[in-house]
Length: 136
Image (cartoon, rainbow, N blue to C red; front, side, top):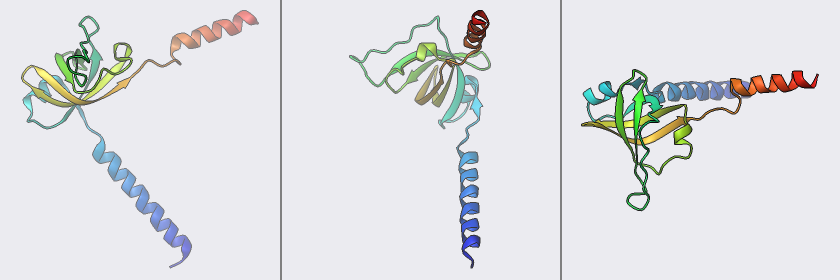
């Protein structure tokens, strides 16, 4: 077998492996009622922090528990127990992805991903344009 064929074969195998890993690790986001109706499997729920409700984190009592209220993408609201220390910037997050299960009235999450506000938002672009036109 030629060296170029071997390299091409390895490259193709790597690409197929990456594709399979990407497709199997992508979880579909469900609503709180769907997670509550399901079994004890791990679900992904996407939504936003309910800013009117307090975020409770007391490291003196339990450094591995953060409690807050979240609204899913369909507008359903639920109490969340995140089994991690309070993430920095939680109150400023634009969206939240939680991975966990529903138990009664509470969603128990063992992992969370946040999308934080970008410093490259529309307001900054407008400011940048204003400063450019002001200097001209």
